[in-house]
Image 1 (tube, rainbow, N blue to C red):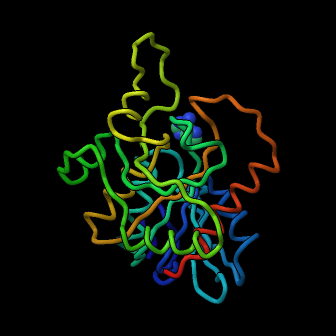
Image 2 (spheres, rainbow, N blue to C red):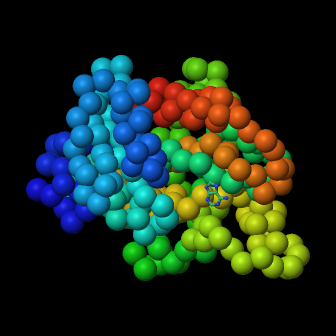
Length: 239
Ligand code: ADE
């Protein structure tokens, strides 16, 4: 029963799917953290895997970059593969010194200029929300493992390369100061919108990979540790 963008059979996905943007990151996660792994889809190179973590079934699949891409994959997973929970695991650029490089952020809401929710379902709000149940599970997982989570709104942007402008305050300062956005990524608004219309659960964990406020030099070791922290929180939750 393939869908237009996923070649898996019904039942190939676990009830919970972790979604990094990069399909090769999905493969790395499956190879590094999961047992009994099998690849379940590869359409357009968007790899998906199912395995177990501490005996519990779990899947991991790339979402691609941006809201149209995660909109397609998350819709098909929720609607046609009976997936209940999708946790985006990604990276983000920080808008504030409160979210430092390599911190792990748990999204409280995704603010966006995107038309995704309006076009998808007529939802003309500019913020969508994750599942509180999933967020509670992720908080419990982090606490159990002594990993600090920074919580707040995030900005889901349609644009990575913005044209330079002299406007003051800048667009991102407004998002920070008026909407409480800690950081920017490009997918969660659409993921949360899909979960809401389909009666499913979604959440988003991010590691801060770059900063709009403090240019810092980073090392491969720091990047690896922050990625591992985020994975421990996502995998250690009892879904
Ligand atoms: N993901 C990581 N860094 C980002 C940035 N600066 N803008 C948008 N998405 C990002």
